[in-house]
Image (tube, rainbow, N blue to C red; front, side):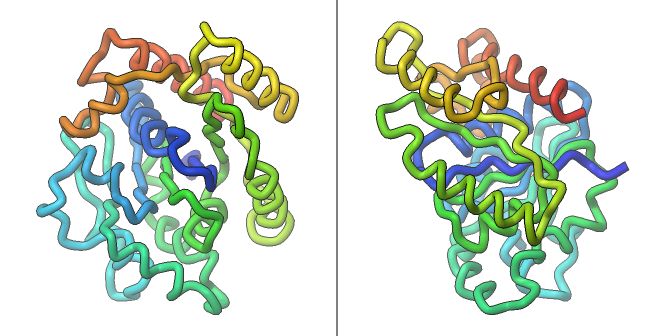
Length: 255
C-alpha cells in the first residue's frame, strides 16, 4: 500500500507551515504510523527541529539533483520513534533555477520518493513560502494538501493563486491531488477580528476547514529550539492539545 502524502503549502510566510509539518508528522508517528518528514524549505527549520545541522551529510537537494544519490543515502532517523527525516540545507535555494526548463522538473520529488513510499504510512512535506518549482514538486508528489491560513486581516490574500496552481496541477500533472483541509492558525477566539476572519475562511472553503484551530502559543514557537515537537516539549499546552486534535482529524479524513 502506498502512503498518504501530505504537502503543507501556502505561499504566504509566517502562517505556521513548518510548525504544522513538524507537529503533524510527530503526532502521526506517536499514533503508530510510520512517518517520513520531507523538508523542502531552504530555511531548513523542520530539519534543525530534529537533527543537528552538523550531522547532515547529504540533503534533499542532493537527492533531487544527483542521480547517483539514493533515498537511503539521505534519509535520517530522528530521536522520535517511527519518524524519519529527509533533511534540507540552504543549498536547496539553488534548486529552483536547476528545475526550470527541465521537462522532468515537476516530477523529481515524486520519482525519488517512489521507491520508499511503501515503507511509510504517511509522508509530510514542508514547503517554502513561494509557488515556484519546489512547491510544485511537493504538490505533484502528494496525494493531499493542507493549507494553513493565519487568522489575520489579509488571511485570504494569495490563496486564490494557490488554488489556481492546485487546479493546474490537478488538471495536468497530478489528478489525484486532494485538498485535505484548511487549517486556521494563530487564532484568538477572544477577538472579533479572529472570529470574523474564521468566518471569511469558512465562506471560502466550507467543510474543508478543519474543526481544529491552532491558537497563538509561545510554547509552539519555543519547541523547535529544543529539537522537540510540542508533544514532548509541552505535552499539556494548548498547542499540544490542538495538534493532537488535528492529527485525529487528519486520520479520519485521509485514511
